[in-house]
Image 1 (cartoon, rainbow, N blue to C red):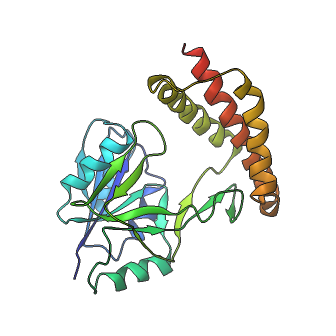
Image 2 (cartoon, rainbow, N blue to C red):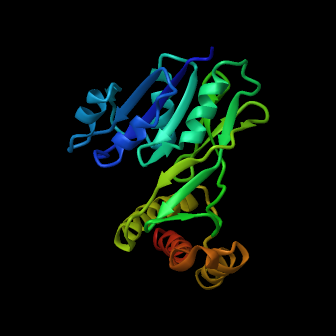
Length: 246
């Protein structure tokens, strides 16, 4: 049997953390690495049986790699605090533990709940992510945004959904967008990528069309329209902030 350590990095996640931990009945250990919560995150984690480690922020990839190295087992199941295993995925991972691993990592489709609706189009689904991996043959990479697990060889696949509970309001989405566009702009500048003025005008429009029309965001109802608008705004702010950082 392959034993699994689940890892979650947190900062003020008292609202989300119980749902994430309670979906992890298929693992052998839960490690929560907290970067300075001022709410009841750590107390909740300990009450629900997780081992809590306090660690100042190392960046997204750095913090998640720290959590993996602090785990007791080589197989790591990495979740964000606003995610949870679906019952199908939980059963699938439980069955996988009984056999011999066929790959160094495994992807799973991630389905997001946005403004109260499960999103199945808009470029948001299936959004496959490697989240179960052998730390001896894989690690997180990415300095600023869009960090991901890179593993040796071709990853295997699970079919059950990883559930992602995203923004519950437009205001929450705007706050998140402001944070991540700042990080994306810093990444553009530090890597020396171009941020020409034309991208401020062309890229947002194309992003909207791709999300709402090409990727069938219209089938996601009003939420699909909001996603397309926010995607366009993300692109605009990313390049506007990058140019401002010059």
